[in-house]
Length: 78
Length: 106
View 1 (tube, rainbow over the protein chains, first blue to last red):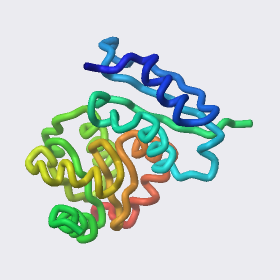
View 2: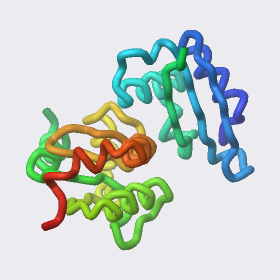
View 3: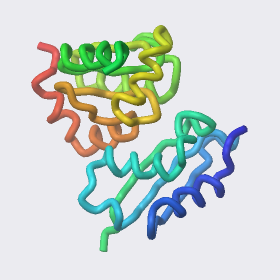
């Protein structure tokens, strides 16, 4: 059962303080998403660690029910 | 270290550039793996590829090895670099070309 965009965004927000999350349904099929996550919590972390933080927030769903999530992470500009 | 972990460790450490992927560079079996191959080919990189679809132990083991839930995974000089999203970001910023410079095909 694929995940809904809202559910993905809610899990990321719950796991990462102050995260801004933008989800795009890439194929319109509710199964292939792109997520852009911006959070001050990413400051000083490598890209790998930033992505791992998002995957941790998704609680093991990444690579399982959520197989196609294109991920971009960033620290807020200001 | 389990047998699989040791096997992965050897693969990663005995090749300067290794891509764990679904399928082969000629016939990638997943869009993300295909993107990873396209980036490496575009940069003219010489790399070793491991088709995880041919080996269930490696397919699961590589996720534990790097604490990374998805495939493809790129390793350069024994270190985990990232999946296809990070590869794309590093490609666009020029960092990947720099990192792969010494491994460029002669």
